[in-house]
Length: 399
Ligand code: LCS
Image (cartoon, rainbow, N blue to C red; front, side, top):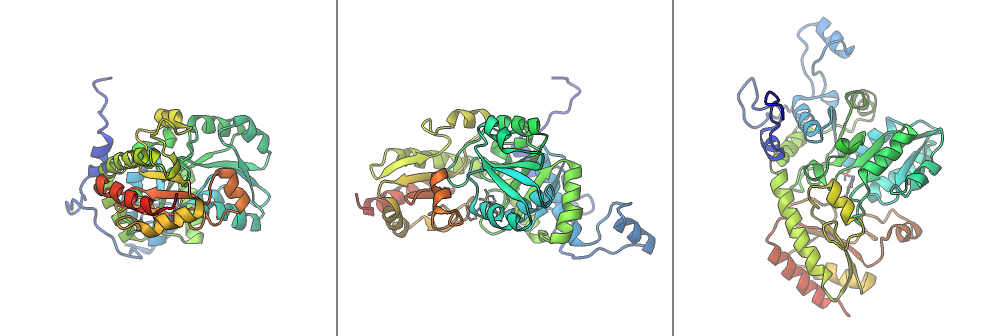
């Protein structure tokens, strides 16, 4: 290493200290919450110049706010991107990113296994505006190429995918997108930038439901986009401005607070999840377990190459199918029967009837969302307590 080069602090240090340090005006260690919808101009000329984009400055919180900006700076830094845009939800981030790139008559390519809300946006809303979504096996570059034409504007993937934890090779996907001259958009919600940084592997835009691990406490709905400065500028001033899915300053502050403990939480989510996956793997009532950290996971090698850890999400297939799943969900005591993920609390849900009920039965079959599939968002509780609860609930599932 060149001794004159500044040493980049570790990811954990960056999470705690942020990219900006203490508030320069007041010395506040915790970023202040600028709970203001509007910002005064010193003169009419200054107001006109800021509105015209000729001068930097805050003027209205839908278009920027210092607390939002602090969170955006932090996310851009942690994801190795140039800039970020915070939004009111993960779905707002996804819709802004996609709508910024397509027009009526265009099409986009998407991997088949996606969060149910994203899938619904692609299957129902986008077609109403003349945008066709073509589902592809994103692991197959020839198939991706064959599905594209002159009106293809982007490739959208999720890895690890919700709910089956399928892993896509980010380098392969980015090479396929590059060959077509289209951007690769990656939903990085499950991995977080602590475990996976798609922009470093050739992706163009990273999307998060910050509701999940970024916030980390189940108390905030929010999203964020990270990418090149010009893309984010367009997203802010041409999409967010019109669609209005802005994050509140208080929620941006909650996310900044969440980021400070991201690595500590992720390490715990991950080690708990691995132990639970191993426990389930040997359980007689369980047919199959999906966790990228298990050697039996079909894309374990890819996960090892591109992720620094495997995260807190586990899916498993009960031998007892749907009725086994219902019994299990109704029998847990410590685990919480709820959707969402990435909270400190362990959450258990049934994708086919809950998060992915927007898929048709044929689409579910295609991606392996069966009636017996159960999804766990493993929290940070004591893992022995979690295993004991799963054990007693599985004992009630009929053979
Ligand atoms: N991307 C992924 C991978 C998600 O899991 C979700 C939400 C979203 C985007 C959308 O984010 P939101 O607008 O909710 O902040 N996933 C959910 C889930 O699995 N259960 O409830 C919500």
